[in-house]
Image 1: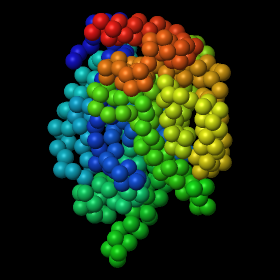
Image 2 (image 1 turned 180 degrees about the vertical axis):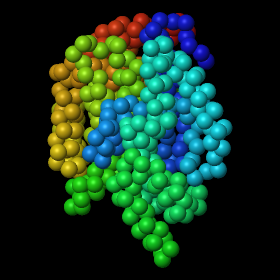
Image 3 (image 1 turned 90 degrees about the vertical axis):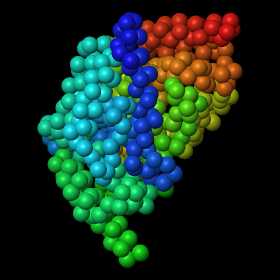
Length: 199
Length: 199
């Protein structure tokens, strides 16, 4: 599927229809009530709410509106590339190649001005160099542990994850953009694993 | 469930955990691929993307950032009040009462400053008096027909809806904030119903 030859509005709607597929991309994280796995569209919504609620955890150089736009767009590439669970065995080079191709195709459905502005937002998020991107990335890493603590372990159980692996793969990333949130999560994760070992 | 007595951050996380329930609120609209009904969390995400993509359809007084925040928050009351399909038999006074109580409870989980600022955003959306709220409402009415056109009719079939009912209940609302989008939808809806009557 490449850009439609219709009007500007036809192209905008074709992109929005294609985006609907993100509702069928399944993540490794469960809902808080443990009823099913989360999809990437509802996850993206939840993260935009995290950004609104936890804006006071952002540094002074963070632009929360930009963060929200990054979080709206950040997982669209998963329509083609799928979700890659952080505790899975990942080939980072292959994933990056897939996601770049997905970004070319999916944002390429849009009129050129929107394609370019959305791609800049997504590229900024992926590069994780600006304060806004670092905060957005921290929220993206912080929400799954919050869900796992509610659902009884979720992906930590499924992937047989140790507390140290969470520190290494997740905590180190949360701490870059939102150190207080990592301190908060770390304490609760410690309690979770202590309860499990004695439970 | 009322506000936790913990720290500010405990209250923020309690609200975000409660919000997770919106992923289990099922709407009358189907996904474009007809595979299942949409939930209100993923619908909210899709609408924020509609706002980003269709910002050029907004009048000059519309604040798109405010629109996006309204769309992130607009359906949270459905955690308690459920979704009320626009083509169903609706008791508008009863629904409003339920939704106001839901807003009191759900936004009440937040620290007071966030409770008040989120409530103002939701109240503005509900009142539909400002240009931003009117545009947000138009998008909320425009997305379901776009989905129905993809999924083969969706809620129009389930509720045995006529073209005139769509004009009255949906079109009139879309036209207030986004007249071009209603013109676009109206033409495609006409084709859909013409094809059905001859098909």
